[in-house]
Amino acid sequence: MNDSEKVLLVYSSKTGNTRKVAEGIAQGLGEVARIIPIEDVPDEGAPVMLLGFWVDKGTADAKSLAYIRKLEGRKVGLFGTLGAYADSEHARETAETMKALVSEKNTCLGCFLCQGKIDLALTEQFKQLPPGHPHAMDEERMKRHLEAAKHPDQADIEAALAACKAMLEAARA
Figure 1 (cartoon, rainbow, N blue to C red):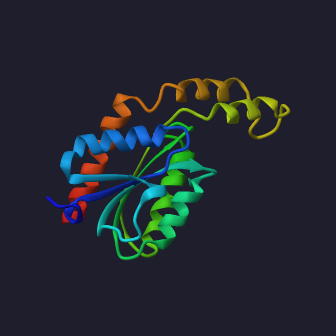
Figure 2 (cartoon, rainbow, N blue to C red):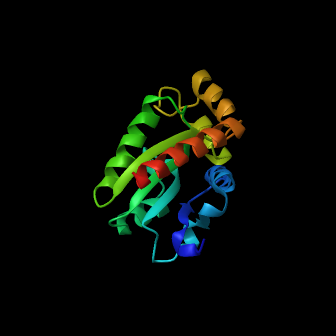
């Protein structure tokens, strides 16, 4: 299999969460995947690709958004990491936002999101906010931050791989 036949697996990662998931997907796909950090991706792409991003304020990070805006006529499967619970309303809304964005000029194959550890600087920033602020650190938010610190774990990576395999099957259909 040559590079032009491989699935391009591009990812953006700030804290290492999305890189860890991307590497797990690439390992699970084997020689079918060509994994590249978003900073190193060539202008020419593949007709079928997987794009990993980290969630920033309900959408993808800036590097991923800029890359998505350049894509046209591709089949794109999405995977991402976020500090919120993967089954939260925030995660559902983010997935819908991302699918709509990709679908503007491409075929979106789906979107998988899993929890990932939160940047410690952000946790500290939340601790400094006054009580009553919508992002102030409270008991529930601290519980979520502590849970997020355990992710992505092996179960998250296996779920991401299964989701991406299903997306690639959809691309073949």
